Image (cartoon, rainbow, N blue to C red; front, top):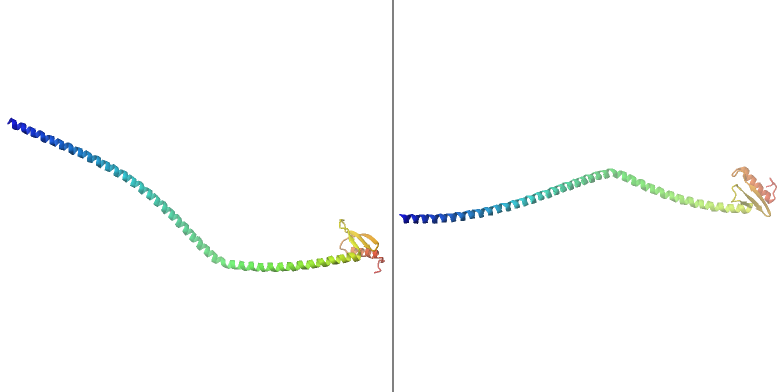
Length: 196
């Protein structure tokens, strides 16, 4: 019985060692699986954090794009409204534009007419000035009148033949002054006053 007991104890010890080895392997395997699972959890947590960051960034970009699209839509709507208002204003203003255009055309025609009249008037004045200048030269030669252009008074002299007489006009443009000037001319010609 003692030997069967020792065999049993031996067997029991072997079985216990095998069980302990199995338990150690199981514990090692469990620890290894636990580390693998924890590593997977960390990796999944990091990936989840990265995905959440990417989703947040994508949502922010989408929000900005929506705001930009809304802003653009608002601008387009405003421009469309302004164009419609301008079109209505233009259609309302068109009769005024036509009236103003006609008025401008009429004014242009009047300007052309006035320009033509001014040219004719200038031509007539030039002819009158040439005639007046010729008459002045004729009267100056015939009457012998020479005006003193440097004097501040209206004065000069009359020279006919060998006679010369100075004169001064007291009231320029009056009948008395013209008569007095003709009297000087007649006196220079040798006529007695009242002879002509």
